[in-house]
Length: 285
Image (cartoon, helix red, strand yellow):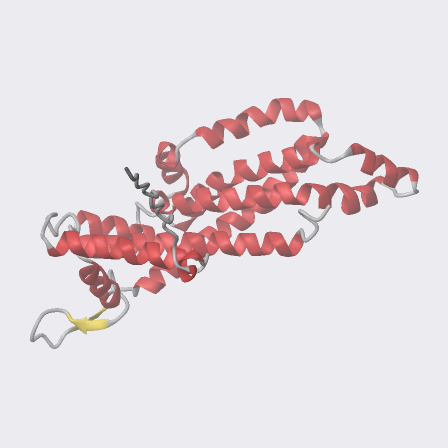
């Protein structure tokens, strides 16, 4: 009597191809998959085009918003862009507003942050109000700013400033409080005066925290751009996104959303680049 033995077969684990493991390729694959799902859902008419237009419609809306065209079929009247401005012009104006608001927030936020970190009794008085402003949603006080400053750019810049100011103050205070006091005392014992100790020890040591605060502040300010441009915000990318939505121009609304999001990613990348340039020692200590 003979017995037969069978050797169990082992399956090799599934492995991704080498080119799919690339850090540069994977985001592209993810984007392509999302676009395919989006296109498939709209092509199959699973969603009403009013609520979710296809990628082609959104692209056409983006192109039209950056070009000139007849106002209607067969008409000789030419209209350029949307709301009398090209989409890129809307974006540039919004970036100018956030640039002014951020510049003011950086200057005053860092100065006040240093002051609050060094003067403890002032810290106890002022810091709760900074946290109070940080906790307020922008739409909560935009009406008051309009009463004070009108509906012009001053109100928008103030709104963006108030969105960016608290994170920078708090990051500056945390950065200074986190400075190793042994380094400061060593500099003073070696003959440095308080000003030099501040410039060459305290400030560089707190700079990484300040830059992180600026990065967060830019994000907060950019997410506030739509609220800042709700009233008399044309030209402005936030106002264009809002008005196109109220007019049920969904393709243009989605195009504006993409532009706002891509601009946010580029701004964040720029801040990270500047952070690496001004704090090259981070991670090497």
